[in-house]
Image 1 (tube, rainbow, N blue to C red):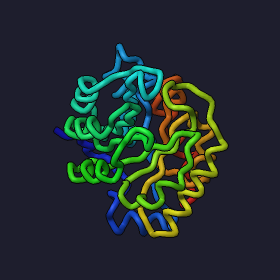
Image 2: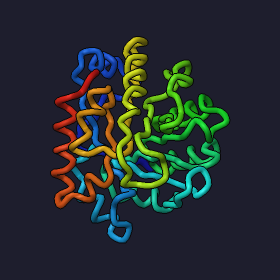
Image 3: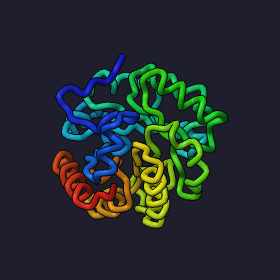
Length: 248
């Protein structure tokens, strides 16, 4: 089972030569990934349709162990994949992603993020996900440095930089994480990689230009989208402000 994205234009797939060229030219497109953590879970299909102009749908899976909150699991993710045309981007905030990440890939997730503090074998897991046709993504919490992953950066399609503490939506944006994003973008550029940088936490029309200027090209936005009167218009506002400021 896959999550198709019919009729949509997305970034060139990581690993393609065109993706790296676009990064070097500074014309990479911004992707917006609304987080359903801020959606109405009783009207989830309706709220998925409300973000049809997005590029991805971001799904936070929390287990009440790795983080204090508890959200949703495999049955809901499976159903999301069935009802949306958007690629499903799963962020695992759970213990033992080595066991569970491949299961979400089987359900149809287009990409799966897992945390450095939870996996025992990050490279092996990344390769397993990619062999399944799923993008492998590494997540970094605010208190964690990004430099330890530089040696294995080419094993991942995307790095997720958290700009809030993981576990709850609607938190204040931590702008002190932008140095981390800049260092990561510099390393990606220096090595000629096509790795995407995703930022999650406090992204809104007011902060989109900050994260894009630092070098992030995939922006997760929850309350700024679902708290808006018109979620689709909020997505376009974030995209326009980020695209104008993007630093490749």
